[in-house]
Every structure is written in C-alpha cells, then in structure tokens.
Amino acid sequence: MKIILTSDLHFAHTAGYTKKIIKLFVDNLKECDALVIAGDMISHCQSEWIGILKILRDRYPTTPIITVLGNHDYWDVVKKKIDENRIRSVYESSVSMRYRYEPTKKSYEHIANYHKKIFDRFNITHLQGNCIDIHGTKFWGLDDWYSKIPMSNDGCNISFTDQYSDGFGSRGLHNHMHKIAIDQLNNILDNVDENDKNILVTHFNPIGQYRDTSMQMEGNLMLPDLVEGKFDAVLFGHTHRSFDSIIKGVHYYNCGSEYDDPKMMIIEE
Image (cartoon, rainbow, N blue to C red; front, side, top):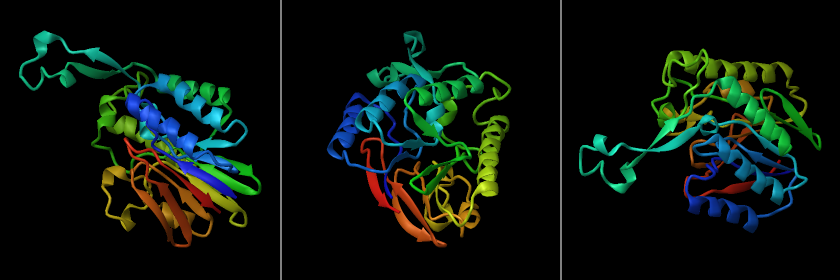
C-alpha cells in the first residue's frame, strides 16, 4: 500500500503560496493507492475549496482522495478596508493595516452542508468517524478538535450563527466541536476490527506528551492509548512539523507542511 500524505496546504494563503502548491503536485506526481490530506486544505475562505480540490483531482483523476477537517477548514472571512478615521497611529496606517478580516455569518449546518456538496462534486472521501477500504487497508478518520479551549486566531475567523454563536473562544462552541470529535472517535473504536490493517487519519497532534509541543497544537492526548493494538498507523497534521516515529507499536506520520513550504511524504504500509 503506497500512500501520499499531505496536510496544511492552506490554499490561497498568498498568491505565491498557491503556485508552490501547484508545483508540489506537478513535481511530485507519483502513482499511489491513496492520497490523504490530514486537514487544513484551505486558509481563510470557504470559496477556496474549489481551487484546491480542482488541483488535486486534476492531478489524481482516479486515485482515492481521503480527507478530514482541520480548524482552518471552518474559516470563512471577508477582507474589509479599515475606516481611515479609525486609524490612530503611524503603525496602523501602514499598508498592511489598512485592511482587516471579518468572519461571515453562517451557521455550522450551512458550512457542513457546503463541505458535503463540494466533496461529492470532486469525489473526495471525507471521513467522519467512518472508514473506507482500499485494497484491504481500512482508512478511518475523524474531525478532531483542540483538547482545551484554544487561545488562537481561529476566534477571529469563525462565527457560527446558530446555537453555538456565543463566540469561538467560548465553552459552548468548543464543547460542540469537541463533542463531534469524541462521537466520531467512539464510533471508530466501537467498529474497528483489530485483525484488519487499520490506518487512522486526524488533523490535530495526538502525541503532545511525547514531544515538546504547545498545548494549543494538541488534540485528544488519550489517542495513543486508545489506538494501541488496533491501528497500524496514525496520519496527522496541524503542527507544521514533520514526524515519523513508532509509539506503543503504532507508526505516527506528519509530513511537516508549513505556510510557505507545502510538503508531502510517501508512506509504504
């Protein structure tokens, strides 16, 4: 089983970065059994999905493409010019400060339905606590979330208008997203057969206790104990750091994509 793993592509982060992503997949176009994207395909806007999915599907027209969602995959902002009357200092009047990003007002349900529509359009498998069998290997995936209420810039770029509208940094929305992740993980653990060849895909770093990483980077830190003896490998992203190591008998991989340096790795499992 040959797998191409990538993550944190942050499509359209900058114009130049988009060209780097295109070059990455042109220069490294290789045959594989599955292309796995471990979250954060887009950068700021839901409208960016079309561009990145078209690039991936054009270069891998028949290859199974598997993904899970990362935090950036919920972002949806518009660029607005700052009112000149509100500029109060020389620093703020610099070109870079003349604009600000403001989150759109859409419900969580609206974003989720959009994801389903566009993944169906490009024949992308979005794993949400379920699995897909490719040549006898079962790929399981979950849309994981932060282990604690994050102190991150996500709060400035996500604004759901439904019952979770009390703010991204609030306990209400965090609990909602965290519950989705836990429900999906429980479904996986209830249905996985340890006699199969199993690979788990998630976005957030599940191995913080084994590395010197910020708590803001971490997802479910119980994962290494929960997957032990059940999974052969775990593929993740989010940290922008490469990782290739075996922990408790399970092989953990992260391709190490960064904002200005998209990467991929080939995995033989």
